[in-house]
Image (cartoon, rainbow, N blue to C red; front, side, top):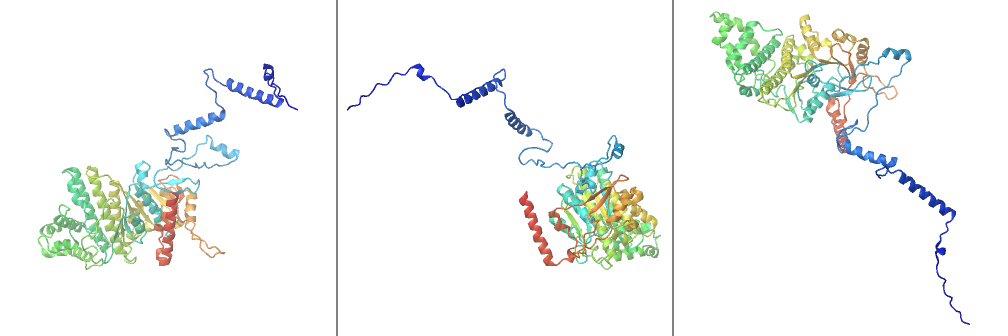
Amino acid sequence: MSLLKKDKPAVTDTDLTMTLSRREARRLDSLGRRLGRRQARRRPDGTPVMSQLQSFWNDSAQARKQSGLRPGRRGWMTRAAGRVNYIESPIEYQGTTVQVEGLWPFVIGSGSPVVGVPLGPHLLNSSTVCADPIFWFLNNLVLNPSAFVVGRPGLGKSTLVRRMITVLEAWGIVPMVLGDTKPDYVDLIEAMEGQVITVGRGRASMNPLDLGPMMTALLELPEGRLRRQAFEEMRGRRLNLFTSMLALLRDKPLESFEVSIVSECLRILDPDLMTPPLVGDVLALVRDRHPRIAKVAIDRNDEAHYYARVEGLLDLLTALGENGPFGDMFSRPTTEHVELGRPMVFDLSSIDDSDSMLLAAAQSVCWNYGSAVVSAEKHLAEAGLREQRHYFLVMDELWRMLRASSTMVFFLDALTRLNRSRGIGQIMATHTMNDLKLSTQELSDIASGFVERAAMVFMGGLAEAEMGNLTKVFSMSRAERDMITDWSSEGSVNPETSKAAAPPGRGKFILKIGKKPGVPFKVQLTNTELLVNDTNKAWKSASDRAAMSSTHQLDVEHEWADL
């Protein structure tokens, strides 16, 4: 049986008609509606209207392009531009309706200006307190670039000054610590790769008649008023220091004719301030009865009368020489001069605390020498012969000089006034206002003037009896006085751990500017600053110091790794 293949029928248009299921028809209808809506969102010019998501992304891209042209409220939004990631919210306060209505029209006191060295948080509103005498002076916030720090020992006076030194040095201000007696600043200056000059018996010597190597540079000043003023100021500084040292040995001021004799000796030995004489040279000139000295002494052509007049001065000059109580510290040439432009410190820690007279003499010589060198450079800068540099002079432990002799107060008073006239920033520190109470009321008033004339006063912990005239001069409120007295209390002991807590006033100060309300704050240090702020190294063993140094090195490495 055979199977016959049938022919295929022809395909017609009717056979091509498509039949959709209900599901397919719904999907096709939905697609058509979407296409219609998309076509309806076109603008008259034919451009499509973007969705909200597309508009957001396009606006963000445009904003990112514009951020490179202007900073936003958090700074420049570009790579490595230091944009602020977190903005601290303002402190909010609550009050009843009766209390708040008294604030209308909601006028509040302004906060402390964000100018100067950042010191730490405000104790009442947690804002950052910034202050230092130089930048506040440059911004017309104070009338002169000077500050005074007063507070009990161990509460952070030197730490406050070190914080200022650290930041000011980074901002181009050159610090000069003109007499470090503990020492508190040697480690910091060494960390800055500065100059450390150790002064003491058997160590570096300081010639009180030497004004430094800048005297030769003053010859570059053109002949005229500026040059004459510069040399006369240097001459006055040298005479003031030398007579003050002689008065320190006598413990009372020199007679007027004795000052005239010393002045004439210096003019004979060094008329142009180029070859500083030694104490022995002055002694020989007076002892040999130089004609010009005899004339100033009014000897009446009588040798016996002359030596009767200068007998006391000869004794003082002999005592200031190498056979006197100071040894050869001030009778030899200056062994190391100050290098201008570098941070420096005079290390006086080798001088025993019991030798108060020598310590005061060394402090006065170092202070006069440093300020004279800086002042000479200022004269050259004003004449356009040197680059203008700013210096920050530090004198800590002021009480040592004032207690050594009553004549030191006159020396300091004259010296600080000269520094203010030259626009040099300075800061002094002592323990209490009782340190400024001297043998007579006149001297006490002059010493108190150091604080009263200071543009900025930082007050740490003090007992009520140690405040002196602070409450009257600065119009301190009851709350401010209570705060300072609370900070003066000793640290408590934890009964569970038997360990003593830090004193409540450590690092806390009130900044007073005239009679304005004080600004209470607490000094906060970074980890990098802690090692050079340890003033209790004498109580630590070598292993403790090595462990601290190792830990400090790890902290520094971690800080750099984070950066």
